[in-house]
Length: 333
View: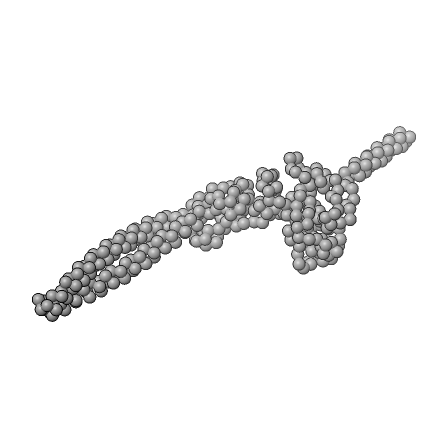
């Protein structure tokens, strides 16, 4: 009986010692209280999503990336089948060449007609004094005037034909450009630097115009959305300094950020967002954005969806606490 009591006493002492040690460790991990003028909210690191879709209906010929791949702006990430367009552009180019040849022919015809007009004018000029002296009949003069007038009309007709042929060339060139644009659109490119989130289509699949092939996470716009009560949100300015501390990096480093958006209207806090105040109270949504140059520098390490805490400074004169001035190794303060 006495041995059991001793064992219980020893066990109790161990438990008490463990609790005391745990409390001391927990206390050591807590940050110093935030100074007046700095507020915070919980959220997730997020980025906008961009859907990559064909402009025209067609068959997916090749997908050049996989889920998780990092892509750069203007990088070709998928190709649509262009067999029909290739045939169409060959035909359009042939028609363009034919139209350009017709222009050259029309220009040559103008030269010929102008030469005929020049000869008709010279003959008429030589006939006028001969008619006055009676050496040439009036009928011959009328014939030469008629040839001159006919030559003038022929020159004008040739010039009008040249204008028509040039318009034909413009139309043929526009057809080539239109088909070439469709061919260019068949090369699906990413407009942003990002990471492939989903492959939504398979090679050989026929898609309607606007059908989704891939979804890209835009890593040039990485941010965290938090919700602040009105008493704090009304003091937040666009461009205010902020800090983001991912849960995985707690007490290790803080990421510099900037307030880029404050909602103009209050709303109920979403259930997935944890706040210290009651959920029933209206809150204001605030977007805190990480600088793009910092994201690009650590592009391989950026992971969206990570939970963390964003801190916002309401007063520029307030100094950041020491734990919010820590930086990832190599990053400037």
